[in-house]
Length: 250
Picture (cartoon, helix red, strand yellow):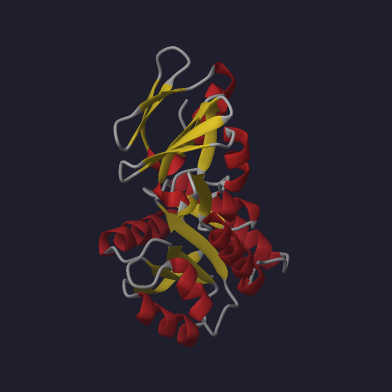
């Protein structure tokens, strides 16, 4: 029997996941749940679980910080997240199991089966340290500020503040969430190389968007995406299928 802990700042999310585990899996026993990340740290160090279901987005201490603060790290990890497909590429790249909220029972069972297989074959990712180091490095790269040269000054912009970029020949317009717009004397391809690929996606030869800001996909023609500021941007035929797959749209 796999001893597991659930950590999520939303009690309803814990209850929902616990109900699914108790009703669909006979291999996992929930030994404790936590809504407070600080209490969860003490709980993991004391209870020494085989498996932790961990929410990433939590106030005060997020999931990555929680992992860093642990003394005991000899367990398997399944991340529960509402992140979109692009943001979880880091999890995939580092062989970390994840469940998208709301959790699907089939996805839950598949994740648990992978944990069982790793533990049975003694190939478990129980040494969280190496995985954590890679994730922290990836997070630092994703949050590295982008230098934008405007006139006689250079503005450092956090990637998360960028909504989209539009090409204008050898120039590029950068549109920020606060409504600011900068015209940069660099090609869109040049700026694309600076942006974290987990958050930014070329959907058209003239446009790169911050996928975390996509709120709708309009299916007519080749398609269009609607961003959080209600800006509508076209999708090219070349990129249509890849963005549909990434957004889990059939």
